[in-house]
Amino acid sequence: MKSKQRVRNDVIFIVALLAVIAIAGACLYFLRGEGDTVTVSIDGKVVATYPLDEDLVKDIHTEGDGLNRLIIRDGKAWVEKASCPDGICAAHKPIHREGESIICLPNKVVITVQTADTTNEPDIVI
Amino acid sequence: MHNKVKDTAFLGLCVSLALGLAYIEVLLPPLIAAVPGIKMGLPNIILIFLLYRRGLPAAATVSLLRMVLVTLLFGNWMAFLYSLAGGVLSMAVMVLLKRLNFLSVAGVSVAGGVTHNVGQILMAMWMMNTAELGYYLIVLAVSGTIAGLLIGLCGALLIRRIPNKW
Image (cartoon, rainbow over all chains, first blue to last red; front, side, top):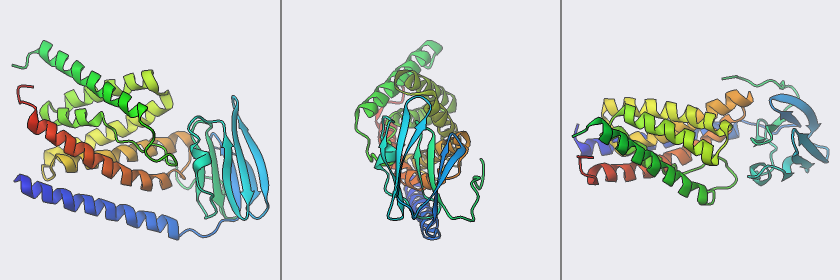
């Protein structure tokens, strides 16, 4: 196959790939409704569930000196302070749609928005 | 031309180059702080060059050594498992696409970049026993495409410019 053809295939491949990603992203985002509870799990185990419509400030302690401060205000949840070195969870935007989550890999903390009728179990385990 | 000693020395050189590039990447500030895992993957320039010049065994060896050494120097073992999953998956996909011969180096590298992120996320989902990480995959797939393209273009340049005796 000539190299010109391959470059053309490259362009088609990349455009197709980005289109698939965009469609998948749009589906994931817009098909989700507003959630009504926030579930906190540490190392895969659910430790607490809080309603999204009640304001809350809660420190989540994990093994070692792990700390993530969860804030719930105006129907949105976010992490304000965290002990982890990267601070990715604290930089995450507030979450309120069903299925949105803030994940702190160093502390193994996952904070997820859910609706009352969904269970706390993951949909799939891969 | 390609005797064993020379091959070993050359691959050693490639590992140290990959390590050097990984170190440069550690020094650089994160590209987008809010999303973990977004990286250029500079050492992959070496891997794509090796894959085309020396084939799968050489590329896979350097890739694995790179991961182990980077983990010992800058990382942790959780991150190693993510890299391993990503590295194995992306290497398999790149070899396959290279054999099929319908994409250029850049296209193969893009596929490698995206599947590296897919592998990492699948491993993280499995380790943390959570499916929510899937949402990260959308962001990482876009960054993997861009990074893969840039890396592929650099790799193609090396393959074209570096004399064939190497």
